[in-house]
Length: 268
Image (cartoon, rainbow, N blue to C red; front, side, top):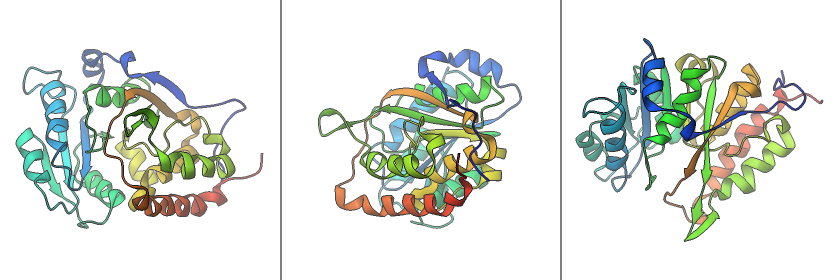
């Protein structure tokens, strides 16, 4: 089984400004939307992120009635992540496997979320805005052929305008170049800002640990084709950058997931 693609076929691209929140709300029909936030020790940022979604996109404080649920999955935090998320208006869930990893936290979210469309956003973004959510939901609400949406963005590092995404550049993209050339158009294969219909997530599954984003991208493209993946430019994304010593486990998980899926590729 290979990643289906036509010659020159790539992922559909948008800018977050392409999507008006009011028009998206009018387009959702009876579909319910959950925004899920896996979090571990993110007390400094999780409250403002939840607040931005609740006040702007849930209709509870005069915002657009687009999002039906904000779900924070606390993955073994030892700070006030859970309390601050709840205070900001999220439903807080304790991950099934405490401290198990991002993939396991996302699995818990998928099981507990009520939405037909599921958007995942990271909990450590310091410049979060509602456009992160509307950008992810736009392609799903307006194009039934889209099965997965990936955010992409500019990533500052240590005061420089670019340089973030070291695991992406040094592991994920080289792996794609060699093993999955049909996915070279994907700007941020490891983006935590991603969305999909529930049925797609349930069919493809969510991998454990740091492999979850890469595995989901490969699995969706393998099953539905690269053209079923949309990308949305979310602008600038500022977040906590891990020291280099903490990046090896992420790279290892990603490489393992890619090698496990390499048999899905056949020669052109």
